[in-house]
Image (cartoon, rainbow, N blue to C red; front, side, top):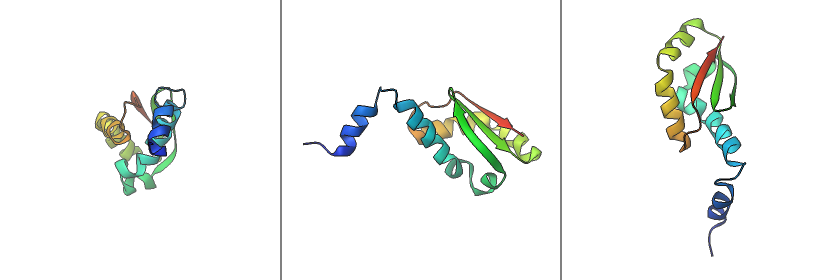
Length: 92
């Protein structure tokens, strides 16, 4: 007997469901990784083909995030437990 969580993980791993679920996980982790202050200036966010698109309403904040986007990319992938993202695009 195995726990249902393990069975589901085995079923999802390697299937076509894995990537979309990981992308949703990354979106859910944004507030935790970016922080509450940044989230206040965020608009819509989405992941397409391994690229995270984040709308930031503040040009100054967008510039600051651009400088640390590779650190954010690493932190988000680490928090998701997989290499989900290849790039982050900060949009106005």
